[in-house]
Every structure is written in structure tokens, then in C-alpha cells.
Length: 136
Image (cartoon, rainbow, N blue to C red; front, side):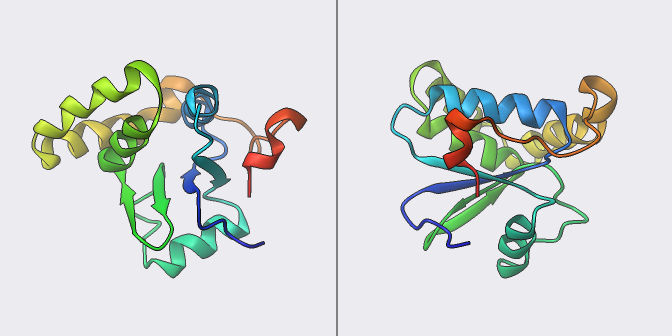
């Protein structure tokens, strides 16, 4: 599959309930249609991670890829996504003022415990027809 160069790509854990909720929230507030999605477990997800040399043993939740520019992981990914959304999500940019190490510690704690706190699915989410075009 060809990766769109004019969209930001969000890679997410397809079996994580928290991650799936985050994807649904991004879709809802993506008023400028900037994002497309793929699960980390998908072939395209694995390819995009490998292409960028991202270690899947240390990065297993969310990745934001801006084609031909950069990629972001952990708290940087979440904050970059929030910055590009409409409405109140732009407020989350104030968290960039916190030291990256502190932000990533909190992010890692949530990521490490996400299945216990929010549960997980037996298989990756299958997008429904109205939003299927947003998934790679």
C-alpha cells in the first residue's frame, strides 16, 4: 500500500482499548483531515517502524509519522497529535514545558499498565465503513 505523503500517520496498538479510544477521538476531532492510521501489528505498521529504525521492544504504543519530515514517539507523539487537532486539544501543548524525561516517565507508566487499566481486544480493531478510508 502506498503511504500518503500529505497525511500524518498514527501507528497505534491495535489490541489496546485505550489506543483504540484515542484513535476514535483523533478521528472525531480531525476537522482538517490530517491523519491516517495503521496498527503497529499490521504489515504497513511494521514496515514504517522498520524503515525508521524504531525499536518495537521499547516503543509499543503510539507513533506519529509526518512523511518526509520526522517521527515522534511516546509523549512527543501524543502532544504533536493534540497540537494538530481542533479545539481544546491544542491546550495540551503546555505539557511541552515539562521536561521530556518526566513526560515520558508518565507516558511509560500508562503504556506499561494500559491493558490492566483499560483492557485489550483479542484482535486488532476493524474500522467501520464511514472511516475505513482513514486506515492504511
